[in-house]
Image 1 (tube, one colour):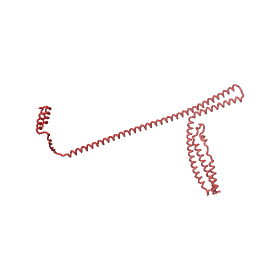
Image 2: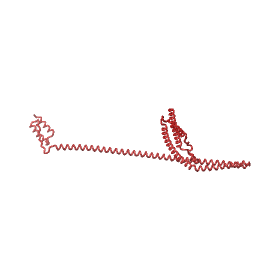
Image 3: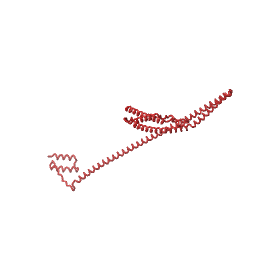
Length: 336
């Protein structure tokens, strides 16, 4: 018995969860239907009929939940929940979460409905403004046509009831009927003209909107192109500045290397001058005395040396020619 009661409680809890989920789904469906934009109403249709197609929430889920709560209360009174899990507490938690979700969905649906109503009201005002003249003219033409038809029927009925049967009355009735048909045709032409004018106005509005969108697209494209050109110019300027900075840095480095080389050369010259001055300073100072060098003895006799010494001044004085000088000198040296 206890197992069957537990099984029954679990089944009831599952049914309650299914009912809660079903109610949440119905709420979501109602919100989606409400959020949809309604069709454009005609000028003669009242505003209250725009949302007449939205279905009312079904009370089946509330009835099922009430019956489940009643059965659970009965089982609680009998003490069935003593040996089973606290399903009622779980159902309360699920119910609280479902109610919170339902409230959130309801608020979302109300917001969407308000936005849809505002859009529909704006569209209706625009349609009323565009179709006011056409609707008034069409109603006037319809009233005129109805009056003409009524008069024609009255005339025809009077002719039939009176039983005059005269050709003049028949012609008169035919003329009245022809006039009524002509007025009907004229009314239809007026209605068609009004509809054509309304269509022309709507087409003009659509064309104006298309032109406005085209102009906006062109302006956006022009702004994008101008922005791209500005970015490209900025990039070119940045590259030019980078090249200038690189050139300046290279020039500074070249000047630095040149200065360093010049400083090295100057330092080398200064060291060479210092070494030279040091060497010069290390030399002894004062008057210098030189010892004359003694020439080595000649391999000829003193007599030959005296003859050659006497011969040389004569040659220098031009008393003899070079041939004579060399001939006599050779003769002196050839003697033993």
